[in-house]
Length: 248
Image 1 (cartoon, rainbow, N blue to C red):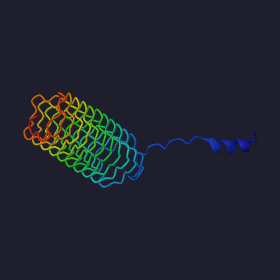
Image 2 (tube, rainbow, N blue to C red; image 1 turned 45 degrees about the vertical axis):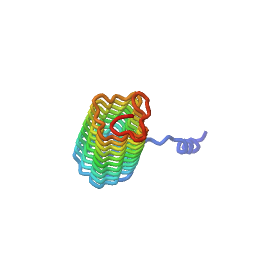
Image 3 (cartoon, one colour; image 1 turned 60 degrees about the vertical axis):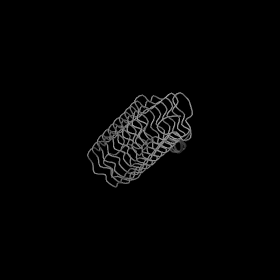
Image 4 (tube, helix red, strand yellow; image 1 turned 30 degrees about the horizontal axis):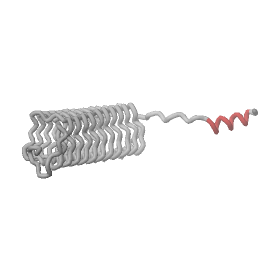
C-alpha cells in the first residue's frame, strides 16, 4: 500500500470524534452544554431545541418561555430553576433534580421524567399529556389544573401532592403512592390505579368513572361526591353506573 493510498484509506474510514461541550458557546438549537455550570444564568426565551444539557447545573437558572423541545436534560440539576411557560415537548429529564422548580403553565407533552426528583416543584396548569414518570418523586409537588391525559406515573411518589382539578384521563398509575394527595375534582376517567396507595387522599368531587382501583388502598380517603360510574373497586366489584360517594 502506497503512502497516498494509506492516506486516502484513513480519511475514508476514520471514526469522527464526538464534539466536546463548549460551555461558553451561545445558546442555540443543538448546543452542547453537557456537564456545564449554568447556575443562575438568565436564559429566558432561549432557543435550546435538541440541546444537550445532560449533567448540567442549571440551579436557579431562569428558563422561562425557553424552547427545549427534544432537549436532553438527563441527570441535570435544576433546583429552584424557573421554567415558567417553557416549551419542552419530548424533552428528556431522566434522573434530573428539579426540587422546588417552577414549571407552571409549561408545555411538556410526551416528555420523559423517569426517576427524576420533583419534590415541591410547581406544575400548576402544565400540559403533560403522554409524559412518562416511572418511579418519579413528586412529594409535595403542585399539579393543580395540570393536564396529564394518558400520562404514565407507574410507581411514582405523589404523596401530599396537589392534583386538584388535574385531568388524569386514562393515566396509568399502578403502584403509585398518592397518600394524603389532594385530588379534589380531579378527572380520573379510565385511569389505572391498580394497587395504588390512596390512603387519606382527598377525592372530593373527583370523577373516577371506569377507573381501575383493584387492590388499591382507600383507607381514610374522602370520596364525598366522587363519581364512581362503572369503577372497578379494590375488591374488584364493578360499581353501579349511578354510584356516587359509595360503590354500590
